[in-house]
Amino acid sequence: MHEESHPSWGMRGLRKWLSTAPETRDELLKLVQDSRRFLEPDTVTMLEGVLDLPATKIREVMTPRTSMVSLQEDDELFEILHVLIESAHSRFPVFSSDQPDNVVGILLAKDLLPFLTEQNPKVDIRMLMRRPLFIPESARSDQVLRMLKNTQTHIAIVIDEYGSTSGLVTLEDILEEIVGEIEDEHDKADPEAEFIVPDHESNETNAWLVQARTPIEHFNDLLNTDFPEDEVETMGGLLLQEIGLVSDLQGQMVELENWQFTILKADARTIHLIRAVRK
Image: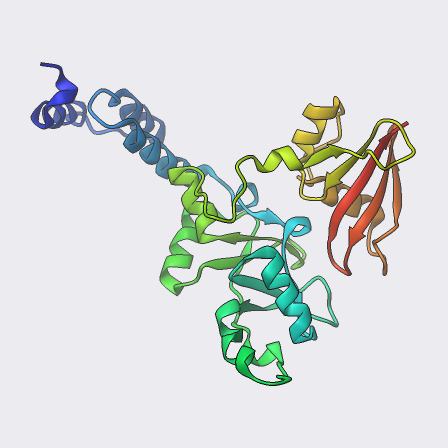
């Protein structure tokens, strides 16, 4: 009989491995990896994920600002409902109308339910939004997981060294580092497949439509480019880095190396869709 087929064999094997206590994280990780014949593969993978959390900075896990689905504190109800329906999210960061770099609250979709039965309801989301939890980009994922658990919060706003919003992270984001991708009914089978598609309506040859949330690494790999990834992670972030603060992002054009980028869709805070043309 194989050791894997009988629980007692597995326990005896684990006791043998644990007879010498590991002194470092690397030794503990090796111990977990060496115990594959005693544990289910999924269990080993989860243990590896847990051990990797302290070495994972929250900037590696977060959704960057260019990909955030957000609201503004002076948005009207019909604008809010459109965002809720399009995104199918349940929690939304709310940006200040006076300081567009700052998140001032978190709106839960369920808090709007009482207003949907009223005729011509007036909604001030300032009165409904919850206090946001702010964390620095350099925070460790295991620390943030503990903070979210202790505060019974599912979402945190990530800020850079200057206090500006650089992204957000959810409880699900961190749990996925442990158990792998968690898909729900709103997730698509292959999200990267829609990041970059040929722009057949453009008069230009070598033209592509690029989602702003496209990782720079994915763009580089697919189109054989070499844009830097050290300061920003997405194509939208790369363009924002070049443009700086402007009053109207939509229609802005950026020349980088032998590429011309045009912002096709954007709001006051976020780039959504880009046309990329290789010159």
